[in-house]
Length: 166
Image 1: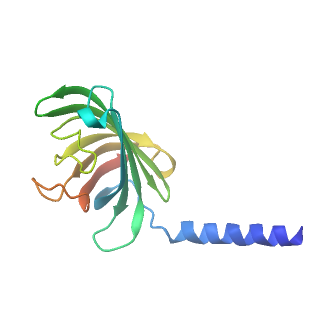
Image 2: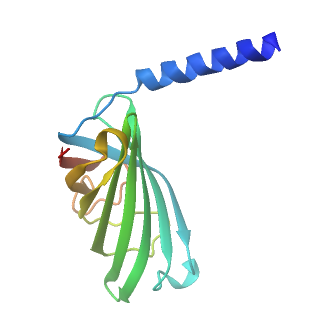
């Protein structure tokens, strides 16, 4: 019993230390970066993106020089397909040390069928609120690749313009 209590106390201390070490963001404007950690394509990958297909992405949020600040989890759904791209809707949640920022968008992506790469288009998101520090967040989020023709999944912009009315 004493051993279990000590182990539990150590685990709580380690968890508290890790949370305290993470940088907290607040309701303000930030110019950050994001790097994709994983993309999962759900649908008929052999035929390309079709209406109803989904893409699940997990991005690391970070400063240009520094540790990760959190993660941006995104789920997209293809609404319409054309020869030159796809209309998608997406919901995203930025999981940060002191809360989550929830965002949504509908956007035209030029290559939503590619499993290995991400679209090379800027996407404007509406911030819909969140949890913790961001429970009353409003504003916009811009995600954009590092270059107009880039297929890189590293160092995309993650520009937050937000305020929180309480």
